[in-house]
Amino acid sequence: MKVDAFDFDLPPEFIAQRPAVPRDASRLLAVGEAFRDLAIGDLPDLLRAGDVLVFNDTRVIPARLGGKRGAAKMEVTLFKPEPPERWRAFARPARKLKVGERIDFAAPALGLGDFFATVEAKGSDGEVTLAFDRGGADLRAALEIFGAMALPPYIKRNNLADDRDRRDYQTVFAAKPGAVAAPTAGLHFTPELMAALDARGIKRTTITLHVGAGTFLPVRAEDTADHEMHPEWGEIGETAVAAVNAAAGGGGRVVAVGSTSLRLLETAAGGGGRLSPFSGETDIFITPGYRFRIVDLLLTNFHLPRSTLFMLVCAFAGLETMKRAYEHAKRAGYRFYSYGDSCLLEPTEAHR
Image 1 (cartoon, rainbow, N blue to C red):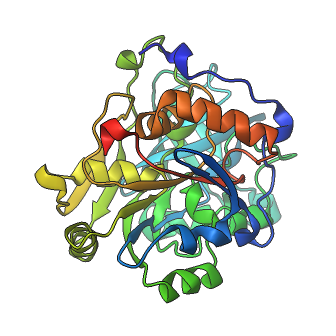
Image 2: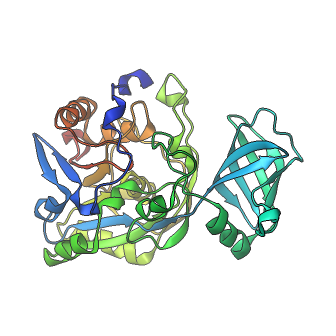
């Protein structure tokens, strides 16, 4: 399909710069045969006993670093580890950056010691391979000290993300470090909302997809067939497989919390709507015409025009339905993107 088909207008004032406080004060647009303006706190009433919510339990690491190449300022965003001490990253500005050059991220004069990386390779679109001066747990510890959350470019800060973003840009069930971007549909959940879901007999389980910075990259191709996804690492264990298959086999619905959960579930789905264990990379790219094998409902945020995520929700609920839903959301004052509100989507008849 032509990428232009997924375009729409969104004035900047609709883009949320901070999340709702508390998290479960965010709004929820239920998208089915009609549109219903609700709150995320209404989610337990929209589900039923026996349904299973599938959360992504990845934990976001502070993957954005400000540094210097000599006297010149640099910013890098890590997006794929190559253990123990190498990372692929996006560098800015990258044009004058040369292989073999050193980027310093710490200031010894301030008593913080050395922390640096050497450029080992350069690719296109500002992509570089960095070899750090340390690896493993020591590198993770340095990122916690010197790094910041890699917020998407539409969330504006004076410099890097701040201390509040370290809390806000992390789900309450984050457990396994490795993501560069948050699974943002999960940001709406609080212990109180989880307790309300439990009280209704709604099951839940977790899988892991380490969301990469590639999720922020624009689609530059004119046709979706020519776009390549950045691979991301994911894992589905036996516990999640049992929970999902039990729900599907017992008449319950599989509810993906976020596009990341959906993409990993669909990667590991087999024939007959059965889920299998999975560990490895996925680059699944879901566009209209895809037949969903395992996910019955999708809870997700509002996405960018012409993005792979908007293409995914259009594949799930229908292009015209989603365009009408987004126009409704604008008229009703919903907040968009990572820190914004959510919607609960039903699949089109063709994909049930």
